[in-house]
Image (cartoon, helix red, strand yellow):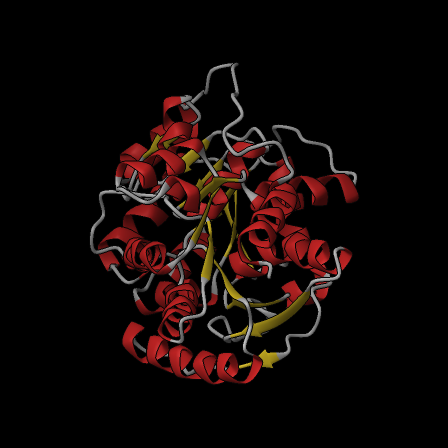
Length: 352
């Protein structure tokens, strides 16, 4: 059996780690394609190095630019690889441009697609990730879900039950594995950890200003690893000097996965616009303040561990200072064996 796996961004790299190891353990051939969607050292190579992901078999190095430009480049590049490799199945992760382009190239060639993290839904119809995920789901023959909510969403939309498999969240697997391997203590420390990278926030002067002012006016110690694109926009909007001169917000360069997990393990709260980071925060028992109105994983909200502040400084200040979750912390993302379940489902569905 041969699998082509398509990755292109930090979340993809992280999810690939244990899948790759499981496939090797079972003697299944995997051809790894890195699209280059995250192309710089801080956002790509460092994750491969730290997580010991093997050197990709193919590296496309797609150009930066619009969604259309990147999608077209990845679609063309992946198609050529699939024609050469002739896999039994193409494996894609999540909801990024590489996911949709890889799935589309595969489906057009009548090669079945397996989609990890299928079925996650929001009402943000024109959010790029929402578009990518919904279309990828419809291109896939195997839909691998990380929550019961995602499973129910797909069944409600009419996807065949035989094509939908709840596996749990492979991001939880690698997160808990990393915490254990680094012997980290999970504690509510004396700082909050912030991440801001979504286009809806960083491309808007108004929204990014509100977020920065919320951080500053909270008066709380905040560690803020800054995505390269976010730093560029902070400078463009005249906010970089403002945040660098304040006493309570500490800007950090982009950090590798192990450094990020170490910061996450020791923080008090997580302040983020990321779908992945809100998951990671919840899994490690951190109250999550969400800096965008998109409500991925409403189960976290229902459990009382997530506060939607959006890009409103007063709401951000209040959440940072006063948000306290309940004592109950229900499991949402499976049992920590998602990577095994994912591989088993692929083998059962597509092995010849």
